Every structure is written in structure tokens, then in C-alpha cells.
Length: 178
Image (cartoon, rainbow, N blue to C red):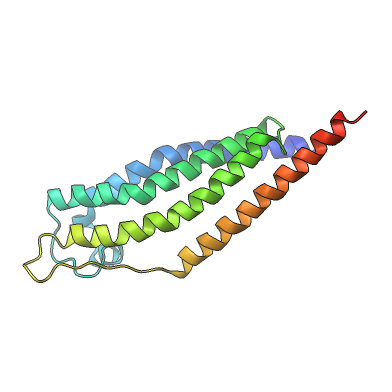
């Protein structure tokens, strides 16, 4: 089996994995908020922002689900882009315009991931503390090392897409030169 055949085989597996992931993410988020009150305290405490008290009502859990779908939507879009990229590799297309577009889209989605996190945390903290007594509502905001990693990785992917596009253009020019 040559290298391209192995790339196609592995790419097919990754394409399927990312296609399934794009469908599974909203189900997992829905299950998380449906059963949040039934989870062990240590687990649910890590998933909730500071200030959440007691069991969450169905309305609060619905609001938390909707807010959680903001970063989940970015994650689903990234999974679809990765599925598309690996679908291209599966077909033997490695340095085409579509490949470059996938890399660019992934870079933008990494930046969107950070933005979604900046919106998600304060909204979720408001939603889960909505039932607290007056004066005990919380808005939390923060940025983590993972956010900084996503920004740097998005920048690196942007440059890689740029370099890939330049290489692709140079290859096209060379193929058209007589």
C-alpha cells in the first residue's frame, strides 16, 4: 500500500469521525443540561459558573442549553470543515483551492471560538444565577490559556493557508508554462 492510499484510508476515518462529531455535539450538550441536576456535585460544580445555587429549574436549563449552543455551533462548524478537508484528502486532493479554503475557515473558526467563549461565560453565569435571590446574580468573564492557544493556533493556520495558497498558485503557473 503506497502513501497516498494510506492517506486516503486514514482520511476516510477522520472524515467520518468529524461528520459524526458535528451531529453528536448538540445531543451531548442537550444531555448535559437535561441531567445536570442528577450529576455528582463535583462534576456539575465544574460545569457551572460561580454563584449557581441548588437545582436548576427546567427554564434555567433550557436557557443554559441555548447559551451553550453558541460555542457548540462553532465546534460543529469546525467539525464540518475538518470533515470537508479530510474528504478532499480522501479523494486525493491535497493542495487545491478548497483545501486552502478549509484551512482559512478553520483559522477563522478558532478566532470565533475565543469570541464565543467571551460571550458564553457571562451569559451562562447570568442564566444559571437568574433564580438566585436579588443581589446574588453573577456575571463572570475570563480568558484562559486555552483561549490564547486558540488565538495563536488560528494565526498559525492563517499563515499556513496563505503559504499553501501561494504554493498552489506557483504550481498552477508552472503547469501552465510551456
